[in-house]
Length: 292
Length: 296
Image (cartoon, rainbow over all chains, first blue to last red; front, side, top):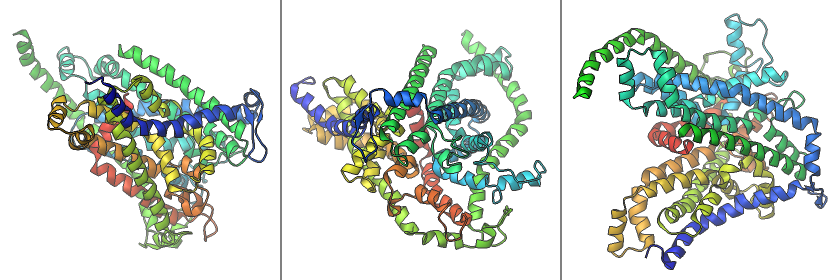
């Protein structure tokens, strides 16, 4: 009965709409992107086949490397802050006392608001003359003149944007780490207390090793999210100065839309997608091994 | 026996250690309060700035706390370009379409995958999860070209389709797990009563999967309400902008010449409210969805 032809057809009927949708709106664009990446195409002129020409061009494109390396730098700087910060917050709030619950709820609030909107908020806070960051730093005497945070110096812009994104996504890791810490059987904790383990010993010998899988998973999600960063840079620096803060996704966007270099944009998209895929695979392998 | 002995013996030790933690408890509580203050400060400051009178909102250097209260900024936002109602309708409309499309596609698909012998099931499942492997940011150019050809640019349905494509793998995964957890007996009882598979889905599975459905709808709403890049690419007419788009555009295109900071803060406050409300009301679903979604 279960494996009957009729049942199979019924199953196909239930799955078909979603399958058609994914084929039309994910698989087809993917195939189209691969095709486009081998062509020169600017909407005005018909596409011409150029083989690997677009990829070769990317290798020799200075701005491609600037964007790629800037994105890697951003990712390398922000990931440890997110993971260590999120973990410390999780250790702080993993008890279920009312104050800890409240802290968890509050830290998580920025996660649910949009990255675009939070970037606009921080665009204001970091604004040179109208922003509260400069006002506050001047009031406490850390600076004497307003600092030009955004769009003038790439490293300083990066710092400001990292601060804003840390505020926005710190709660994401924290909530998942709290879940993992709370899932540790209480007997293990009690046994370690009987053995007279200090708090630091319990963290390094018990809590960290038993939550390592979650740490790796959150690292995976954070790295991929950072490599795909766009909103915060588009809104807070618009890639300035001299496109030094234009991330990889930003550069794909610039080529595809304002510049209408569709084939080249598609090739850059491919490079981006493959980079993400490599990270996904590496991190998943790590995760699986730690799980065993 | 020994385990009981050990447990009895361990209690005073645990109590003693807890007592020691109690002394540093004040310090940890203080840290919690500081963390809460720091995290809330930007949102509170934005809210305060949104109710400053026009002149104060444009003051350099800025004030911390408003010296006077005024809804001027909200009034300017209300009538900014096409008017706030248009942008709210665009954002809500897209989010609702995304929820409807996501549920209409993934509830039956999850049911089919969980309960029927679909041929090549693993392959089908992987295809359905394709968007997990390929980031949508990389697919926007071909999607834009395709949507432009079939009239789905500058169209709420078009944007909702993109948002559904982004949200589909997560939703399918959550719903499939939820349907797999429905006891066979419930389903068999319905079938004995002569229910068709469709009736079983409506009468047995959907009521049993309400928490998963709420989670899927919640994440679809928040993602669609907040999504920026896709909307930026697909919407070029300002009458079709969603809230984040018009706010980003408003930084440079104002009647005041420079950025209208007060109006920007009013817009930020209005964008943040639905997300925070939904989160506070449905926190349980949010956290459970996050745990099962991220920890694949």
